Amino acid sequence: MDTPPIFLNTTFVYISIAIELAKSGKKIHDEIAKYIKKIKLDGDNSVMSDFFKNNSLRIVTTNYDKFAEQLADSEQCQSIAPGFPIPRSDAEIKVFHVHGSVDSPENMLVTSDDYYRFMNEESYFSRKLSTVLHENTVVILGYSLGDTNLKAIISDYRGFARDNVIGSSLFLISKNRINQYIKDYYSCCYGIRVLDRIHIHDFFERLNSSMKEANKCLKSSIESTRKVLFKDHHFTDNYLKVEMSFFEIIASIAAIGKSINDPIVVETLGKIIKKKIEFTTISGAWEQYEHLANWLIYLASILELKKTSIEEVFLDAVLKSMETMKQEYYIGYSWHAYTLWSTRWSRIISSNRAMIKAYIEKNTRWSEALDVVRDG
Image 1 (cartoon, rainbow, N blue to C red):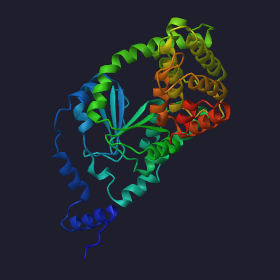
Image 2: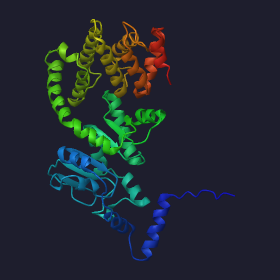
Image 3: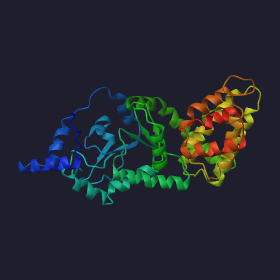
């Protein structure tokens, strides 16, 4: 007969260990801190270290260790944890240890009493984490959203993002493949975009290779977008014919604090999308069909578009894109656009997929379009 599995409650185990240590005049917090301090970083961490040293960022961790500080330049890095004064000077890198750090063992969250106290207090760290979410692009690494306090703060941000119709700025990186229903759950409940099958080392390697050009593009795009939105300027046709232009414009809109639902933004995006559709009618401009599909997929992947001011313009463009695509090579139709819609359909937010599906089924009998929206 097989031995039944034994499930141990972590909190119960910690309490039991704490009791046994107390009998010897020791504290569990101190013993854990001593053990963690002995652990050293291993392997090649140069890509992470390079990113930390060359960029301004905020790191929020529930770990007690000081590995993040070790990867960063100590002169540019501040370590902030319960039990220590909050630095008033600025720094390129700030590491927030929301559950405490080995520098102050007595303030580490270990036992159930520690966690109850933390969850029931509106601490500096809770407020700071909320601010970080609202003001930055956030990437979640090596974490499964198991912390109740963190989930509450992210959920609150999700409500703010939905009410103000702003794009998702939360990403979860996973080295493993994540099922689509889990991706949809994270997107719907927390506004988190999941990027799976990416190792952390590869993630930072890609960041390092792209950051310089990205910062350069963003700066010029913000200036151009401000002029278009507020000074009656227009994007040139040559600029809009380039695929990356749309992504730069969307990023710039978020950077200057404008909602996609803002009348000025809706009008501007409507003109841009209509201009892109116009480009597809030019003889030989097959790449424009591909660009249009990519733009629409991207927009539907970062924003819930149902009941927004841009919904009608978006759906009309989707219909035009899908009715000019073919699964195989056929003169007058884009098989590249079909490949994009079919392979990236699952990336689109679930509510947008449902909206697109209903609209396509109502307005066309085009087989390729129906095949895509009915896939999964």
